[in-house]
Image 1 (cartoon, rainbow, N blue to C red):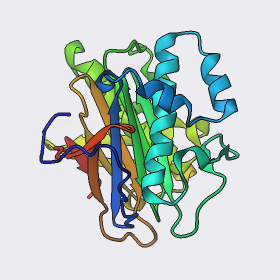
Image 2: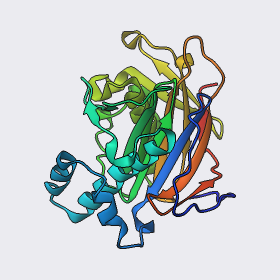
Image 3: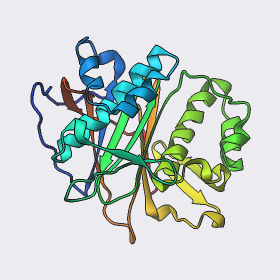
Length: 274
């Protein structure tokens, strides 16, 4: 994690984390950090039969491993906020295909969103607001020559003005912001990608604009972008409520499920809109 900060590893016991409506927690698990061979069978023991069957249908071993870590991360982290044990959580897809908790515990509703790319898994957890998280490996292949598939005209023009050496990273910076918004809205790619656009302002700022057909306002959302690993870009989108309330605080942790975790200080490369 770039920008290391104070934090201590936690081992061997489950510690509670408060579900604070003024805070969003990000849990970042790097698959390369999982060094104990005995952890993977423990992760598999947490999953249901349908989850295991889906994982086994994956062709590549790296995909099966990443899926296993991601599902174990969700289950173990949710059990830090509420009473159910990791094995007890039940999930169902909503009408848009987004996983939801089918057996929610009493108390404040838990919002969570998961993203993974390459060897990194990022889970966002909050309450009382819509939440979307996206992480992308900037080393993966992508079609930067067909920008009209992903971006609004103004975004495409800004990308094409950049030298080719900078275009790939900016592509993923824009895409993670757009994807985090789509996930926070809960409708995924059903929303037109060219109907909203991001502009970068100054060193760390950003602006968001919508076409009338989306019936949305930039004042409803807050975004953060950061570099969890040197070869990854991540973005978070959170709803501000109606009317917009105070800006949520973000806490970032590095974690290996069932082994250790630490809070880290992260410098956000961009946030907004103000």
